[in-house]
Image (tube, rainbow, N blue to C red):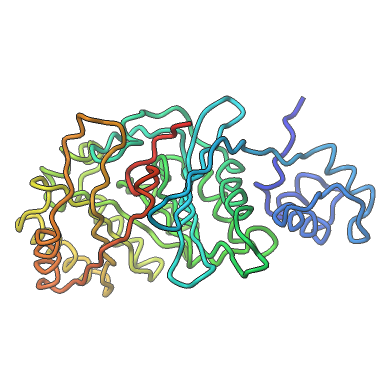
Length: 354
């Protein structure tokens, strides 16, 4: 017996194709109702009974159980911990933006992660499984329910920088982005969606072809290849140069400047040689594409409950020196505010604790 279709993971044209008795107009109505938390199976003058019954027989709206909401006492960040039907845990973060009432959602694409980046709590978990398209979409729907629409609060953007490597689950991530940006579904502007990667060149090129309006984020770690490999084992399979050139091709195809992220670790990747290498890499990128990468410097967030964590946050003075060195080589950097550290919601801290 075929599994029921998860309605929140379908575009209207998908639903009309998979359930032939439904017209495209009816499919738009049904999909829209799901993403506005209305019961799609309630009788409606806009959907014929035969179409509604056919969809009810073929589809459903599965949910993730929210087992915990953790509000930061330091800032307006909110972490949601979900449990899947197979009792796996994953996390998402509601991130406040500068404009009041606007939020971004940091979503997970996998349960755990196989890449083992040294400065990331998720990387220490190993990979359990990929998330399904509907499980990715459902994280955004759940965060929407925490907002007050009467006060104008809304999800403005989505960043795939939660648990997992998004481009290792590219098919489902791309499908989820299409749903989230569809006017009849998530209705989020594609320009406000960022898909981040530790560095999978083939996935970067796929992203450029399939989602040309979506921005690419790249976790650089270090622009010194030898050091990068000690921090990010993926560099052994996909060296820095290969990822760099995939990023160049992405920028040429999409005409979008990428986001580069560097988590500074005291005494590890914060020296002048690292800063110069990053500045030179950015200058090469600009020469090849005509676009400056947007470089985010991220203060390290300690991995919660781990007394053996070997890394420390850099001092403000060392961080400023690093940024000044990069800037002197022609590329501006900005310091990313990474909030919610008191509830393990900050960059690098997601580890799915119930």
